Amino acid sequence: MALATINNEKPLSAHVVVLGNEKGGSGKSTTALHIAVALLKAGQRVATIDLDARQKSFTHYIENRRAWGERARVKLELPTHYCVTRGESVSLDANEAKEFASFSAAISAVEHTHDVVVIDSPGNDTYLMRLAHSMADTLVTPLNDSFVDFDVLGQLDHATFAVTGESHYAEMVREARRQRRLVDGCLTDWVVVRNRLSMLNSRNKKLVGDGLTELSKRMSFRNVDGFAERMVYREFFPRGLTALDDLDETVLGTKPSLSHITAREEVVTLLNALNLPLSENGKRRAAARAEWYSVMNQPLQVHDVIA
Image: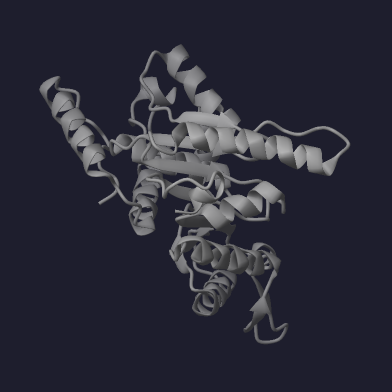
């Protein structure tokens, strides 16, 4: 695995999932936490790393989850989390060295003890962002369903909307995948996730979909539907919740609604489409936990969301 590029050690066991996109507001942190919680519920040992040391959306999301669990007195699954220390000197080289050291320390702490590492990268081109992309076993690129966001991936003909070329982020991913192949001969599974999908069919929705399908053939990525435009996803953040948590008023802090149920269904569909690996030990842990819930007459809402 490409994780070995950090310290030149033997190939590592943890599967690396990187959330990446140079366009902000695409849902990277929301998608990252849903992936992490899904894996935790499936019995996996999950570590998470926030590379956006300035904004820290992913870190704040996890902190909110911990705080809400304590306040509501409910058990919410939490990953082993790290946030890269930000370099703030006047020297770019010194900043990169400090941030690299922080990232390397986080990786070294979890590489042999966890099944999956989920990395949320910043929405801009940085040294660590490129490094994380070159390490990815699975690269997930959330993309809002609009041509403004499509622009980071591809260029379009102004009249026909046909794809005419790749944009800066797609070119960066191509180079990162090439670097990965040079290191260990493995291929990064790149999945572009269409978020904020309109629940109504429209010309824009079809054209964006057609463009992604055409571009996927050029760039060898998989194109799947993600989260629809639902207010419930925005309401999850202050309490650190996900659509996979128990649909219970104590957990949610409000009465569950049809939106919660529908959101859970589309999240489960997305997670299954990612084809993330599950360790056999993790499967056994999930099965044991499900049996315990059954014995205690506390049915587990979602314990195996990934086939």
